[in-house]
Image (cartoon, rainbow, N blue to C red; front, side):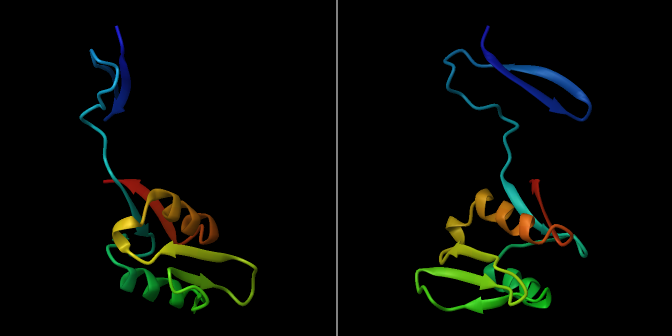
Length: 107
């Protein structure tokens, strides 16, 4: 019996797959949330607005990346120029550098 254990709403259940390659139907995409307002970040314009309010500045060194830095630190946030390529690894980078302002959740 192959499968994946899924925890949802306080209940654990086994989602079986016969081929061993199927994903459970409960798989969800991750989204970045601005915690003070619970706003889901849906565009770079929204993200840039929030980051600039937190003291981040645009860094225009590489035209293939959207980058932000803080003068008060060595931190640099580098994102793909296309928002469609904005993945969870980029979201977690933002969360680590702004712990009180962002979080990543399953949608």
